[in-house]
Image (cartoon, rainbow over all chains, first blue to last red; front, side, top):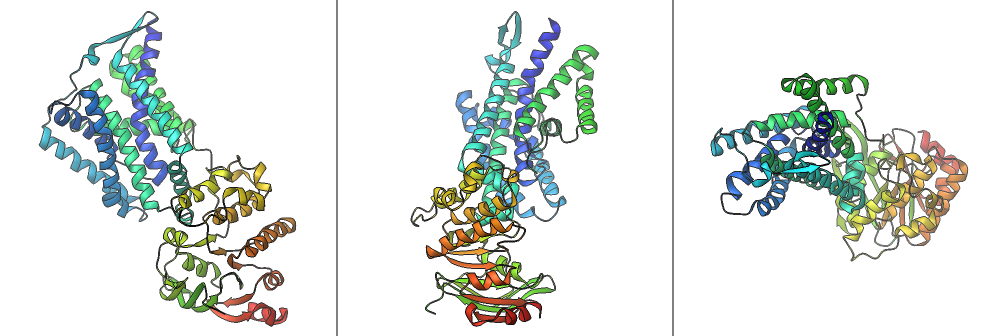
Length: 287
Length: 238
């Protein structure tokens, strides 16, 4: 029974992990950009919720709905005016720029909100749901459902809409996309906005699920990296599955080897994937 | 010739120190077909990329429908009515055949003011081979189907000037016939064509005018009927 509980919890935590990785996957899939500030954008969303919106008396659900478009705007603006000019000049410039954004964001949060631990105080954190004799934290179920819903919305957006087709065309061949009257800079900004918006959702869930600090972005980035490596670069479904696998590995490691082995087990799974299936679980199928 | 749809005057295009196009000039009237021929490295593709905005010319002038468009980016030139069928087709591999057409049509739908002569249905009429392949991935179809799709994709953006780089390169004779039949139908609708074709005989037969490039300059120009095959071949090989 304890094993089933561990597996169930692993899947539920994996929903949040998958969501954390989705933004990184969108950025890489569209622009071949490794966005080193993605984790910090997640934490920025969490801080915006906990230190600005909720203290202003805005109900948490409404506040959460404000965080997502706000993060879209932040992601869009950073891409259009800060990251965009560094693209197309080699691998290093955008890496340095996003690393710089990460450093700036962490220090802004440190200055504005101090290094104190924060979390969203809500009844959700202590509530539980009983599933077939097992009790799991409600917040974990919410994490999983919201993560899965985000994946579904993104797949619909990319697969069924004009914006999605234009994003995929730009990802395939930026130059030919221009011949279709698509402005790649606008597509990149839209992709970065969408990626940051998923970070906003992840930030809300992070705030509701655990405590966080200005430096938590680095931990989020590591999770996102591992999830994307396990799932397959540029594949959203693969990324989500990668989140589930990574979380399962961590929780099983904690269950059988002890809590201190959770992270190590996750890293070992990532290492194993890199060695035996470097393309990830579900790589992009097109060449 | 009345007011030309496209006028190119002294166009120069370079890659670093290498001048690939050196002072090329020509005109194309509305509804006419101009063949551009020349051996590999003559500057044909660079000329086309300069005309459609993918490559910024270093000097010279490009006037399209009375507007100076040199330096205008490619995505803007498409909206103004210049479309390119690129060498190598450049089909989007992660999109299906139908999505490849729709991605161009989506952008045109944002400009409802321009009349639609080439909706997707018209492309499928021109190239029935694409109907059965509509749901297949762009990377899963034959080279001939890719060329049909590349032409169709350019057409749904509703151009007034269609540039085709290497129309028949790598295609079987049967597919070449299908493609040129479709181009003839497009011409009959009044489309202006500028095309690169390695088959000199076909170039002369299909075009109203012809220019032959050699090392980035125009070696021969004029009405296609006024040149003998031998004269064109001499210009072609320098």
